[in-house]
Length: 230
Ligand SMILES: *Cc1c(COP(=O)(O)O)cnc(C)c1O
Image (cartoon, rainbow, N blue to C red; front, top):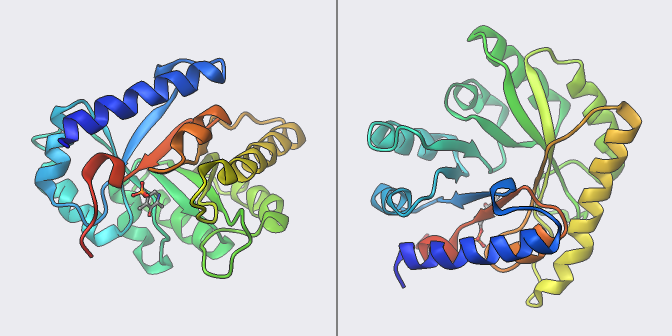
């Protein structure tokens, strides 16, 4: 299957799922999770209409951005993988939205580095929604404290929440985790009187369920680009 064909199918499914949740296709951002994929494949997806790209690693992302920015002038670049504090400096230079803020020390560093280059960095707080030992993300019980802390950071702008639920063969099993993330977001909005525009959730095998449950950004890798070779 070609990337173009894959994307057309995904856009169609996103459209149907958006309608199920009373929204429009335009309300949802399809982000290509392009880790380990060669730049040519990203460009192919761009030509087929994809405008949002999410990389996992700062170095790999920067390389691709530098290679592709002239050919893809209106592409948006997000960082979706776990972020080491010592890479914050580069992350704020290159990525429009960072999906993986999960600790105070990282908020400190991102804020400091964003301030140095005089920009406001948009971030999502990543929540370890399945409370798994192996996953990045703040524990749901610690979310409120991290959110409150991040609000005090003048050069950070919290836009919402992100999660990667545990993997299940049956995509319906992801649904309760997506519902839980939505509720966490709604609780923060109520409690702090702030609007949080984004819920980043849903991947290749369950993005339709995520959109039904309120995702505004779906991060799709293999269903767009094919299998990754690690
Ligand atoms: C790889 C990755 C995805 C996409 O995974 P697929 O199953 O290939 O769609 C989404 N989000 C993050 C954080 C990832 O690392």
